[in-house]
Every structure is written in C-alpha cells, then in structure tokens.
Image (cartoon, rainbow, N blue to C red; front, side, top):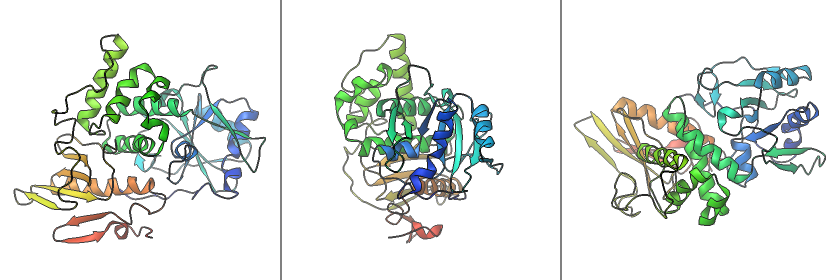
Length: 349
C-alpha cells in the first residue's frame, strides 16, 4: 500500500480559518453537516494529525454542487480513499473537492452510511473559531462520535481488514486519550446497545480483534432484541480469545518467531500500542493481527505478513502526528531490525 500524504498538514495557526471555511458555505445554504474522523479526534484533544477534511452530510451530491458553485473543484483522482485505505464507491459513496486555495481536500460522506444521521434532533457541538468567532463549526458530541464509530466498525459492509483497522484505531485513540471514556459512568451517555462494549473495554478485553468484533456484534444485537442484561464484563477472564492469556505481562518486548521454515511467521511490533487498546483487526484465513502489551503480533504466510505490516504502518503513520510513533517502531525481520520510519522515508524525531 502506497502512503499518500494529503493536502493539509495541520490545524495550527491561521490554517483553521481556511480549512473550515467550507462550513460557512454549507451553513449559508442550510446544509446540515458534521465534521468527522481526524478533525473530530483533534477536537477532543486526541494527539493526531489531520489530512483530508471529512464532513458528513445528508446528500453528498447536492452539497458538492453547492461547493462547486463557489470555487471548490472536484477531485477526480483515483483511487477513492477513507484515510489511507482504498474503498469501493458502491460500498462507501463519497464526493471529493479541493478548496479554492488548494490547501484542503474535502471529502463529503453520507451521514446515514456512517451511522450518524443528521436529523432535526441530532445534537452537535457548535464550536466558534478564535480567528472567526462568527463561524461555529459543527462537531459530533463525544458519545455520538463513539457510538457511530462502534456501529461503523461492527457493521462495516466490506469487511476490509485495513478499513476496520482505521476505524479501530480511532476508537483506540478515544479510549486512550479521552478522559471521559475512562469512567464507567460514561456508558450512560452512549446508546444502550453499546454500553456492554464500553464495560468490556474498561474490563481489559483484548479489543480490536476478530473475536472481539464478533462477540460485541452478537451482544449488541441481543441488547437490541431485549435478550441480554448488562454486566460488568460479558466474558470470563479465562476466555483466551477475548483476554490476553498473560494478563497484560510482556515477557519479551521484541522478538521474531518462525514456523515451518518460511510458511508462517510471527512478528512483534514494539512500542506501538498500549494495553487494552482496540487497535488492530485480523484478516481471516490469511493473516491474524492481535494486540499485545508490547505491540502487536502478525501471523500468516510470508507474503501476506509483509503486505500486512506495510499496510498497518501506513495507517498508523496517518494517526501518528507526523512520526512521533513511527520513529519508535521497529520491525525485526530476520536477524536485523530496521527503523520503520526509514522504510518509506518517514519523519523521525
């Protein structure tokens, strides 16, 4: 997977005024909308960078025409992306436009498809910009944002491992950095059907895996049917599919294991994830990616593992605020370690 650095490199300084000027156009034309993905993370003080500006609207074609009339121009470049993941427009419709100053690529997404329908009753946080107080930028409330990410992750139509990884990374960042999410009582602000998900994350389940996704989808659906009662944790800690069998203890921070002389390999990616972060997802029958306290383990054929770690690196680098994490990551391939940032000419500290 080739890493594609998008137009805008941050929200600091005077960049916020021009970056969010699209909101003024949509407001003037009575188009309900909400800022999404990385910009929403930054709004909640998550230490990540922003790239494309994702905005949820009811009708992406109508909103695109409105922007085109006032100077935005359509971006026809392929492939179509969510983050750094190629997506099929049949599964994930979008309209992409470049701002008049060529600084920001705006990606319009259907709000209903991303589990955050914009109705007259939808709650939004209207945040005035310091440089332009009259412009109030609409962000999703924290609980609504998390609810939508959970449903998007559980119901992802393509089951694409890399897209699931992007969504899981965003949930991981929220649980790692948003203080409110560390409280059990935050569940009261969430949808009822997602409250067990919240309890299980706080209970220390090995989140982000295929097993966790299947487990949580079944619980959510049972809650919606009224056939499940909430509890502090939905599974026994003896369940090795859902809990780290070593109880969060890392015996070796970095190592390489080989099985069957090249047919299968297992790599540990160090200094990448924190314990109990819902960050990674596996690819069934070909590669399995599972988090551990020291990093994550990737298992599968040599070719598939190689492709997986490159794709994972690209996605994690997107959420790395330009190298803070990638400068620490090392893949131990064979007997020699290489600075992961050097693999793609990444920025190091």
